[in-house]
Image (cartoon, rainbow, N blue to C red; front, side, top):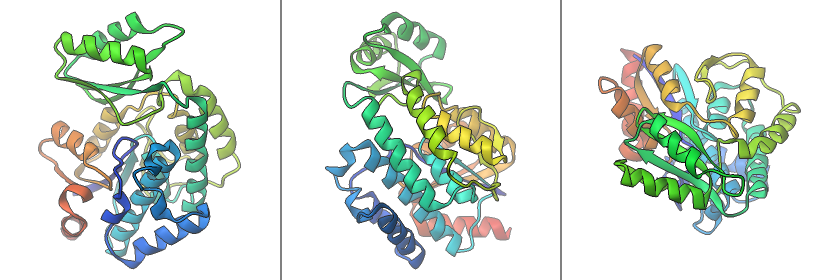
Length: 309
């Protein structure tokens, strides 16, 4: 049975998330490396007041994902594929060996800073469940204007789409979506307008910075965010990491690619269970686990057994 590791993006964070990591030497080394590279105690990043910063959120997610990955690696567990949602793509790229962890920390720090600077307040993201994308697009087109733009963002599932942009327009779209029968329409815990054209300048700056970073051919197949394809070329991975900031994440298509490649065991790295929940709904015959929901020991045991079999 093929195994895929999934790395979550912004919105899955919660205070104290790094305390939920397994207690082992591999995790300790990741936290030490992060603290030394960033010149800050990594545990300061996941404090409730710290998580009001996009930069700290994204760094916490990267650290948590790689710490868990290294803990699995220490147990002899290696996935056949990796994929990350939004900033989780940096974790996936580190796991594949495409980019060094220290370089990813610096790039994610820059990513967060650029995003915060571009839109410090008044912008964010929302999610709509149970409405066709075509109908949602009609609402977005109606309420979007130059002063309060809003865009369709990530396609997380056939019936789960995120929108991104100005909060007043997002709120209007969400209200109408609820009135038109959407199962759920709510704001996300994200305070910047990710994955839409508003962040094109961020993508450009990040692409320039990534050109100065050494990338290698991935040792594990990496599924891109933008076009949901298996990427092996280091330059294509660079482009995916840079441009996915300002383009929608095609997550449903990416996870479908994993399934079509034979993955039947999906394990979500911490924090949260968002990606595991999406996979469980999309692929009912697959085995779906998350470190947060099932615990590291159970996930490692299941993965080890599948590798033996």
